[in-house]
Image 1 (cartoon, rainbow, N blue to C red):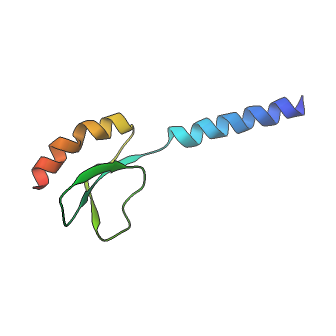
Image 2: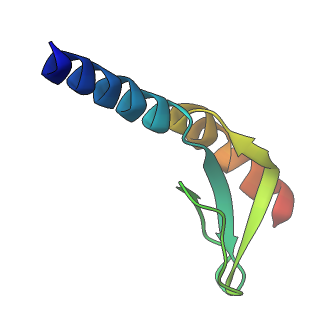
Image 3: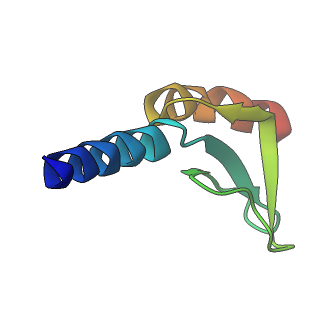
Length: 72
């Protein structure tokens, strides 16, 4: 019984952690190339563009061309 409870809690925690992932659109300063990443850029060679974050990778990917065109 306790083992099932622990496994259930672990499964819920895993789902909650992956569901809260955010996606960012970043652009390399030198080449102006854009890509979608799961973490905010901390390197000085990349800059975040667009809104603060996107909830899904598909949503971010669909905005890459739009946001990158505006920045060029």
